[in-house]
Image 1 (spheres, rainbow, N blue to C red):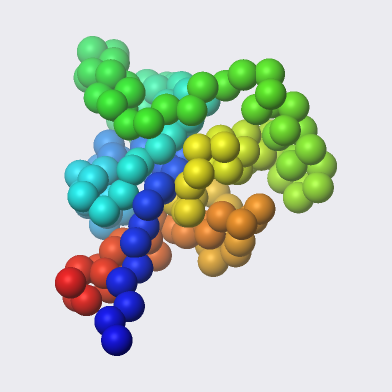
Image 2 (image 1 turned 90 degrees about the vertical axis):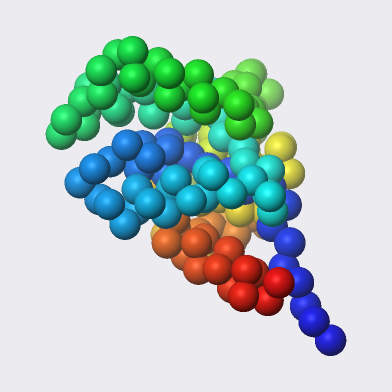
Length: 155
């Protein structure tokens, strides 16, 4: 009997989005581009907060900041993903998650955004990988690529 893993919805936070342009980490950059580029097996989800954090990171905190026009084009491209909007209900839920899981507010917002959008995975470089938070599997970019490669081998 063949078992096929279906990755339905994957939440990608800002720590992974910035890897798309991080020339100082070519392996992670390639993995991020591969993940974003392969939309056959998954719906990719992010949040308004994550894309705002992405823009700030690549324009002001990178070793070699992106030109504004390039960053704005990248931001525009990222809006093609499913983007969870930040609203009062999400923030209120995140305050509970922050308290119960003892995480930072940005992390709690990520968890709640992934939860309300029905994600199976959160791909991040921030959380400890391999844990399950509120029923969502947390994976690093590299681990997620290993999961996807395993799927490809079975198909």
